Image (cartoon, rainbow, N blue to C red; front, side, top):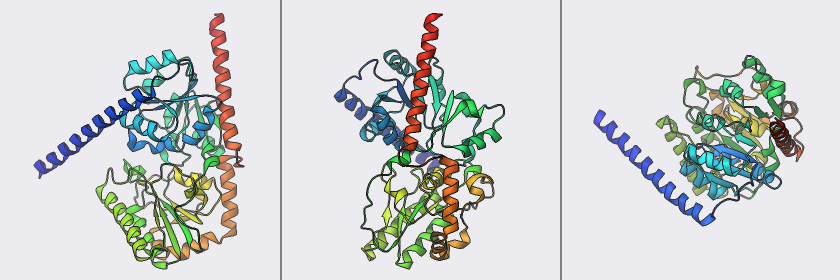
Length: 410
C-alpha cells in the first residue's frame, strides 16, 4: 500500500519537474523573440509569484491593467516560469521573468517602479516588499467575505485598494490598530467595466443559470466548495427541466486537494456534454474561458459558493444565490451581504427550478441586491470604477514624486 503511494507521489513529482522544465525553455524562447524591455519606462509593477495554476488571480486584472497602461505603462514581475509563460501568452501586458532575487534587483535598477500591485497573499510577496522607496499596494483578486479577506497581512502593505465600505468595515472590525481611513482606498471593481464578450450559444427562451462553485479549500474553515454537496444534484435537475441552460464554471483548482471533489467535477462536466449530445438545442456550457465577461452580465441567475465570484456577480445587481456550506468547520461571516443573501441549502437542490423561479421574480430581492451592490462597490456606473482606479494610481505616483523631491533636498 505504502509502496504504491510512494510510486504515485514520485510520478507526480516527475511530471511537475518535466512541466517546469518545458515551461522554462518555452518561456526563454518567447523572451528571446520579444527582445529586451525599454529601460526607465515602467512606473507601475504587478508582482506575481505563482505558477499557471493560480493564473485566474491575474486574469480578471488584465483588462483594467491594459487600460491603465495607456497612460502609465505596467510591468508584470513573474517569478515562476509556467506563470510567466501563461502571462505572456494571454495577458497582453509586458512581462519580466524574475525567478531570482538578483533578477528583481536588476529590474528595479532598470525601472522606477514607484507602485507595486499584489493580487494575492503569497508569502513570496515579502521578497519584493523588502524594497523601499516605492509603494506596495494590495489589490486582491476579488472582493469577498472569505476569512482571509481580513488577514493581518494587510498591515504589511502601504495601501490596500478595496472595493468599498463593506471591505473597510470588515477590516476595521477584524484588525487591531489598523488605520482603515489612511491605509485603504475604495476603488470599486474596475473589472465590471470590462464585462465583454459574447456567449457560445444563441440566446432563446431558456433560463440561463450561471453555476460557478469554488474549490474544496485547503483547510476546514475554508470548505466552501459545493460541487460534491450541491452541484451534481442541482445540475441534474436543471438539465432535466428542458427549460434551463447551465453555464458551469468550476474553480480551476477543483480537485487539487480532494480527489472525490475532483471526480464530482468531472461527472458534472460529463453530464453537460451528454445533455448537449442528446439535445443540441440545450447548449449547456462548460466554461473555461480565461476572462469573465458575458458570464457575469448575461445569465438570468447565478449560483455561487462563498467566494469572490459572489461579489463579482453582486456588482451587476442581478439575481444571485449563495450555496450554504455543509462542513460545520466552514467559517461563515454572519455580517455583510451573507447576512441577507439568498441561501441555497442542499435540501433545495432537487427542486432548484422552483427555487430559481422565485428568486428571479422577486422584486424585493432585486432591490436588496442594488442596495448591497452600492455598499460593496460604490458607484457602479459604467466607467466609474476605472476612473477611481486610475485616480488612486495617479495619487500614489504623485506621492512618490513628492517623496523623491524631499529625499533629494536632504
